[in-house]
Length: 178
Image 1 (spheres, one colour):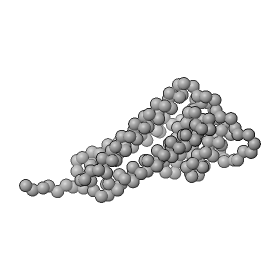
Image 2: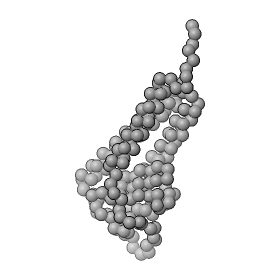
Image 3: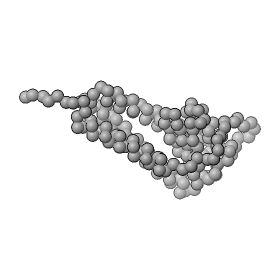
Image 4: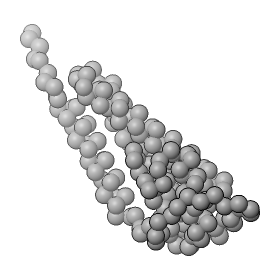
């Protein structure tokens, strides 16, 4: 019996990479379609002395459901992406470069997930009940529900995001929703 040499990308690995690429593209398209306009003007980080600004009013049940649905959808998509990356990493026929790329993508994904969860938790602890965060290298987007944000609230959110993510203020977008 003669064993056939497997090429760099056999059918299984090529299919997994194709599916991973489609997942990333569909996630990006979904993000771009659902993003709303950021608050107007530039926000400078200013330390406010005295009393802390009050948190935003409680979000409506519909807004809470929308945020929860997005968080569940994001968790599901991330679980699928992690599963596909783990399959590539565990595939013995995958090339060393492919495995290294999959490991790097998995590490970046896990770091983004940690940053998002940490920042969302901090925002909720400060009274922003409906908060979603999307963190990518060089960019952080914070979506806050519950109505219009005051300048003091926007500064508070920006300050928390800068402290937690170590990103520059100009790399952080704050988006308010109704």
